[in-house]
Length: 196
Image (cartoon, rainbow, N blue to C red; front, side, top):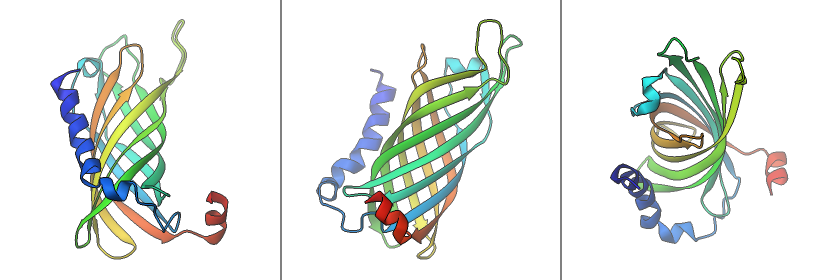
């Protein structure tokens, strides 16, 4: 495992070790609120993959709620990758995910969420070529870290860093930064009943 990967793992794992006590303390506010988020996403790393595709700005949509331990989240990240080679097709990427993490309140109005998510990376190449299908679907894992500033009880702005591994034959590793906004609401009673 490279020093680069060790650095990423340490960056995301450290906050969880710092808050090990709340990690094992049962949450009394399970499913009380839902935070809806939208972020503009930009891919910032470069590897062999980027010799063939140029990443465009993407969008991330998510929902997060307190769980019995930590928080659970689900969402969709949409990105586009333009072809850099004449014999390679560009594609749109749809990452449908679910995950878990821990939120740390560390300053007045500030919190820090760290977690991971697992999902399906669906790549749409627009058309089929010879023996290759239009769609490719792969398992993907992402580590996430988000710092949020709460403007008021309902609205927060955030900056997020994430590192995603897509388990194709040759693994694709993509690092992202994003900026966005979250809106928090009380969970309707019927949704709480369904989730519990």
